Length: 501
Image (cartoon, rainbow, N blue to C red; front, side):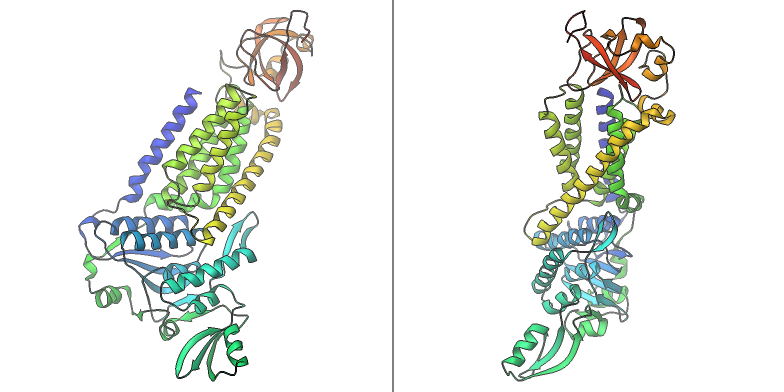
């Protein structure tokens, strides 16, 4: 137990040491111009980490943050978390954000642009086409209708909050929304299909200027269209033009936020986080079947540490989530090895672990202010519980099968050394089968919680690996063999020398 806690503390220290690695950006502190962060390619946890560092860099002096966007989008959870981070920095820290759409800000990228104070686009830039997607057990999937409804409402509200057309924003999300440019009383404005039909039914004098998107097409705007419809604030030939002519600063004063090695690691680990969870649970269950602490336990801790590290480095997980996971894991170990059968420590530990796994996906400062936030909590909880259940099922099957294989015996018990736990299978091959038959009596050489060692009366010089089903056995108690299972004896406590329970 002490060794396990030591390993956990070392891993926590490693996570703490990794934080400065992400935060560093050599030589940038002396600059006072805009902080520029390039968001390129599919949104990932690394993109979120880059944005977080840009905000940290800009916050002390209230500098402008420029998002240089060239992205086809990404997962809803990442998009929403990044958009909320921008909104919080604008509201709480007074930072000014300017989006520059270098080539494209499609799907999730368009919300990042919309969350900024200003949007500027390159002449070739495109923005829109924002069908929300999620990553499930079957891969990339279009979001369900109930999720899409909340997503559309929040998208519309976000556009209104930042002074952009809510109809255009809604049409970017849902292809069923018709978007039309009309002229009424000499004023041009953008309406959806429903309002257009209502105006015509009332006999209002309206003129259809153009149909921007029909009921089967998502809104996607070019730079000229975005400027015409007041969705963008200007067009700049390059990022340098934006900085020098629009923001009035020299390029030498710009602080670029460059990817670090840690963020590259994040981009590799984040997509496999669910599989790390499954393997972590699998190896933990295998380890619980073995005495002492071995390879399976180390592998389990490593899987959970890597999963948590990817979220930590991306800025999603905080110390509270680390503490919850470590404390929860410790309580589960206490339930398994110290006070088995009480369930209080185990249940509390499981709840803390589930909380840590779910909350570490949502980012710091998470609230239930938006309906999207509430949807994401449900999605994160269902995803975590699904993968956890998968890990438990696979782990229980593997813990039955693995000990029967040479590799499994190595993983469960480690290399054979003098004075360490002996496997029942190897010892049974060398002793009289009658000595270990069901009903054979012996004494617990160590505590069984639920695994330990016993000495049988018929073989006093040999210690056998044994387990007890339910409860625990203290060292020195008399036991009786019930069966052999998964490479060890199964015993129960006896009350007297006659072998009667």
